[in-house]
Length: 100
Image (cartoon, rainbow, N blue to C red; front, top):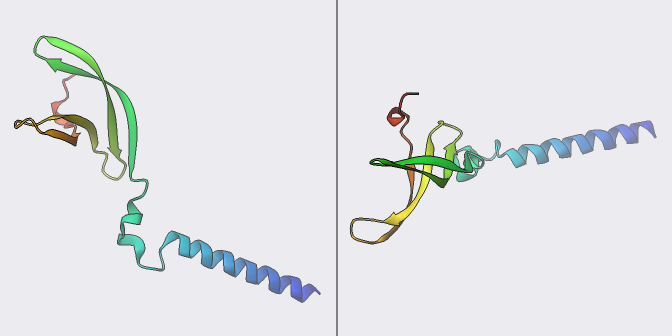
């Protein structure tokens, strides 16, 4: 009876190992697929100051943080020069930040 319990435990461990290995995708060449980028971006909401000449106002926005590179973008909605509706991520340039 002891050998049967050991065989069951070893078989269960092997099945769990293979299932876990398949879930990570390391054995199937999925490391370069779009699935590998899941969780790369974090979305946050917050406020930021908008400086339009002498008028400074607080705006609310959605920010996207790239956890691989540290780049941060602000979601923008509006119209372009031809009056067409546009949506895009505006990358925030850290070099434009005013000194504190």
